[in-house]
Length: 201
Image 1 (cartoon, rainbow, N blue to C red):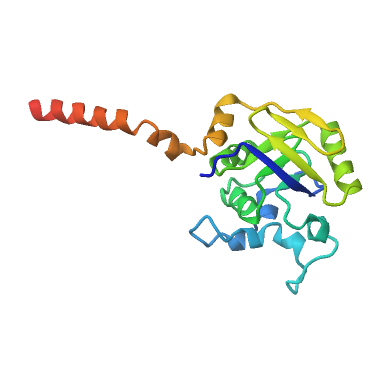
Image 2 (cartoon, rainbow, N blue to C red):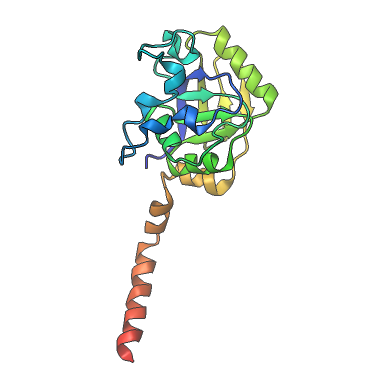
């Protein structure tokens, strides 16, 4: 998994509460066995009309948000079923950071396992980010995970809280398997000792 330390990226808004995992990646697209290829289906029923054409009413389809890597949304983001495909789709589309006032627990945990930084801010702070995104075309945020800050070119500086264990996961580019492999030598030594005891009987 790619390590995350800093990111300076365009911000795209999805101004809705209770964005559930079926809206993030609809169930009909869950047949793939790879983690890649889901980005094209992100927010599918909002991004496209019944004919498969871009829906101009959906905010993310506006040209000003092309290439965005920071997603802002409202409370209870990632609710609904516990499909890991939701963070896969977000990551594959190009988002590395999601900012919202709150998240569903399973989605929040799955983000860290897939290299996505989910940041929790107050409702007022998120409102401010929506206003800044609307006011400044091509609006960017600088996300500094090492110092746990957000900043922009217009004087904004926000600190955010994050569990240190999860922060280290992202800073070092680790998932559960990677964390285990950090102790590969110790595991191998244990297995050798265990095998020696078995054969000594």
